[in-house]
Amino acid sequence: MMSSSPDELISDRAEPAVEIDHLRVIRGKRPALHDFSVRIAAGSITGLLGPSGCGKTTLIRCIVGTQIVTSGRVFVLGKPAGSAELRRRVGYLPQDPTIYNDLRIVDNVRYFATLYGFDGRAADAAIERVGLTDHRTALCGNLSGGQRTRVSLACALVCQPDLLVLDEPTVGLDPVLRADLWDQFAELARAGTTLLVSSHVMDEADHCGDLLLMREGRLVAHTTPSQLREDTGCTSLEDAFLSIIKRSTMREAG
Image (cartoon, rainbow, N blue to C red; front, side, top):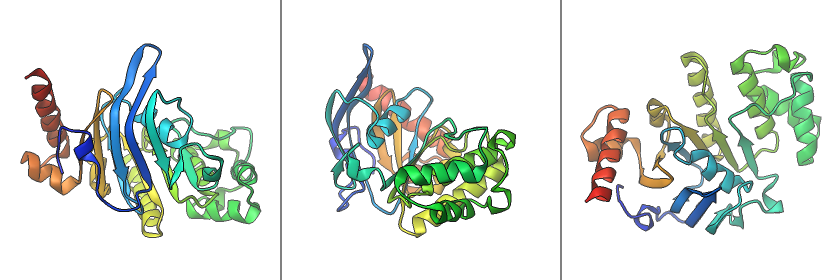
C-alpha cells in the first residue's frame, strides 16, 4: 500500500498493537514529527526505516512513553503510551546498551527482572533465550559488541513483553551477528510478540512483514517488502526507497 496521505497510510487491520493518530512532536523549535498516523499490527515484525535524523528514535520514544508529545495520541496495546499498566508488557532496547559494565551478565538481567517484578528464573530464561547461558557469569565490561547487544535484549525480554521495541539493534554488528539477531526476532514473532525494529539499513527490510518508511519526520509509505518492489519496479530495496523519496519530493514541489 502506497500513499502520500498519512490517513491513507493507516492499516485497516483490527486490534493493532500500536495506534497513532495525528502525532506532532516539536523538539526545541524544530518539528520532529509531522501529523504522523499509523497502525502497527499485532504479532508482526514491523520495520521502521529511514535515514539518520528522520525521526525514528523520536517516534519510538513516543511509543514507549518517554517523549513529550505536542499533539495527537499514541495508544499501545489499548492503553495510552507510557501508562503504568504497560510497564510489564512493553520491552525496549535503545540504541545505547542498557547494561552496567561492572556487573555480570546474570546480575544485569536479574536487576531488570526485579524492576519488572520477576524473579531469578525469568532472568535465567531470558539469558538462555539470547544464547548467553554459558557466559552468564562474565563481566559485561569484557563483552564484545554483539554480546552486549544480546545482554540488552535479554534485559528487554525478561518481562516477556507483548510488544518489543528495538532502536537500531544491529548497528555496528557484523553480518553473522546481524543474521543471528534477526533469527531471534523471527522466533519471538512466531511466539506472538509484536516487534517494532528501527534501522537505516535498507537490506534489513526483507526480514519484516510490514515497513514504515520515514523522511524528515513524516511517514511516506506503509507497505511490505514485496509491495514496495512491485510499486517501484526496483529489485533493490534501497533503490525502491530512494524512488519513493523522489516521488515524495516531487509531490511536495509540485
